[in-house]
Length: 421
Image 1 (tube, rainbow, N blue to C red):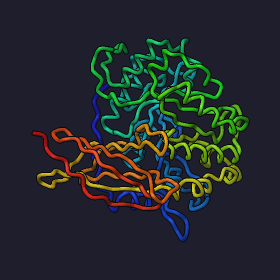
Image 2 (image 1 turned 120 degrees about the vertical axis):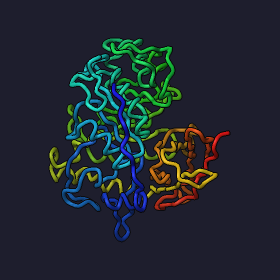
Image 3 (image 1 turned 90 degrees about the horizontal axis):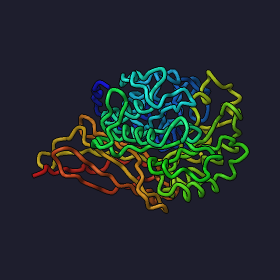
Image 4 (image 1 turned 90 degrees about the vertical axis):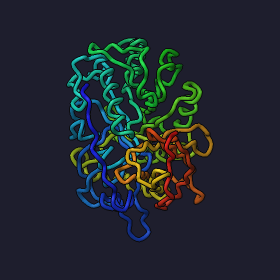
């Protein structure tokens, strides 16, 4: 795939709080400020929404909810977005915390290997999974919010349309190993993006006993209860099983607003799963939450009555927005005080119980050396602890602690990097 260049990100006037205010993160009276966090969409959609709590009629879907992470499909277009537009809007314009790439397996119209799928910003109509992995590996060097890639409907394809050696090739391509024009991955080559994670969609009926050959290749599980309305009260039991049967694997729960076989999900199941997932995030047992999907929140696909029945803005204001906060800091050269552009900043957290570090976000500093993010502050006013790691070629790595306090927007002291040598 041809190389690409990243758009240069200017300084945000006033930081994330100002950006969110311009996009709809406003507050009035006792209504908390909207901020980005760890909840997002499995398939963003470019569309308008009905009025709701602190949402005006015809507001853009993103500004209505300020989703903090998304899963974006390797496809020419989806959800009224062209692929490049989708990536750049969420990683550049909206500066979200995390973006997961996504590829379709053969059962969903994808191909394991499509050597013709070579355009970085315009995937083929029948996209290759190996080529999709290459695509997200390359884009992650431009936009570090790319955390890895999800394989949709994985288990119904594994040991059939996807063989173990092919899964290893997909993983190798995602890690940035060399891939020749035929799609063959050179397993012995060095990995240029070794931090990227490979996740697999897993439904309630597939938790079972996972294939060991797959466990060797995957880093996490994107868990969905397809028959959500019938099984949502067993969510805790499924999470316990996943932790036991997928040891040390990251978990990203999915929550349906609607799916094609069971239709609209009730507010009871959506609310229950949101509350449970948020608790698990605070404890450190899950790393994010994805809602399916953007389609089922916009006017083009749902009625006003359905929008009111879901009441997502009410749920977010009760369970989520009040407990988010933000932080902003500048990275500078310790000798000159000069702002350092494109320093790589990674934020991790282990939660309050799990004590396993999970990636919260990773971004480059902008032209003025600023980095900013908003995230979970927790239900306690003591806040949530995070670790920041800052790297830049020619400088010594530096780590620092950070506490996000619910409802607060902090400007922190600058981080000074010492030149090597």
